[in-house]
Length: 368
Length: 149
Image (cartoon, rainbow over all chains, first blue to last red; front, side, top):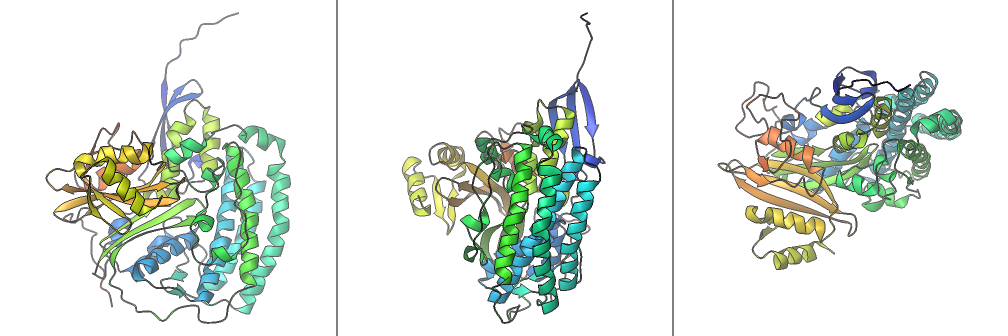
């Protein structure tokens, strides 16, 4: 029997408080039944005017603010800013600091990817187990950072000219133990998620980002690599001592949500390889260079680094004053989520949650 | 292709477009901006607009574009200088989709209008607000320089 049902387009507000939006993101969805016909994201709920604050702080005073951008990978934000500032000031951190920076940045990448894949699995209905596994392992990384700099979330560890604390033999042993432990643990995630048929069916073919689409929208990081573009700032524009290490850049084939998950799992393995090589080669010496406390930057610089979410760029303009004249932070999540409306048009609402979760956004760095 | 070749190509294709050479790029004449960006995207294979922002120089506002070519592995900085009494520049949303949100952000924070942008609304600050907080003449209650010792 054929029924004739009158339907009309419905506007549904998803967020700003919604468990699947990963922060205070408000999506205005236009729905035709279950299908999304249009999407207007509204951001800015976490806008703390960090770029304006930067114009009233010296470079040294600004470092703690970078912790609050991407609060799941603060080390990488510290690193990006300090490298940009050092490039502008023509400083170089001592060799020991460079190795310590690589180690903490990669550890933080693992911690961040763990949260990314587990909350993604949660979005798809795997409610407790993956998240508990990930939180348990992330706790080990966070504890290493706690011993290293006294903080669990906002580290302020990487400073202009070096790092804030030296690596003690105790912490070094903990890191080495973690590498051995976590290498085995990734296999558990494979059993739990990678080879899980429900998880596969649910995420394969959803939210496909083609290569051209990714470049057009300036999507970067694992989401770009999942589309088959072999681009990693650590490999292609090496900074610190990344060119001394042997690691691969995993890429996906289809650019769907599954590939973005899979690239992250493989990247954690590569991070372990980098940490292992770096731990075996840390040179002796000071972890911080003897530099001034007050800088008067002049000129301008754009420096980008590979944060767990993609290209993190700092554009600093100085005019010889202690305060930078302008500081722009190009964050990967901002560009990645700008692609969302085009990405989820035509999907079910439940699949849109899958596409959004696989992008791995952090609202703190979108709103700044 | 390197930066010098890019500058040469720009000068040859659009005479008079390049006002000044910078260490990492060029300053483009405002009237030629649309043509220059179209050349970059369509013929010189700069596939991606990585960053778009602005700097308030008090008498002028510089709009700063960071375009990247994955083909040539080359990043170029392009600047367009706008006088304070005429803050209009052609939008590049037709060339790079990433410009959509970048331009909205610059409009929100600096008040630069991008002609041809499909949906030029504020993005971070509330709709209906009249200030542009990253302008140097903006006086907000919280804008207090911290003493440097």
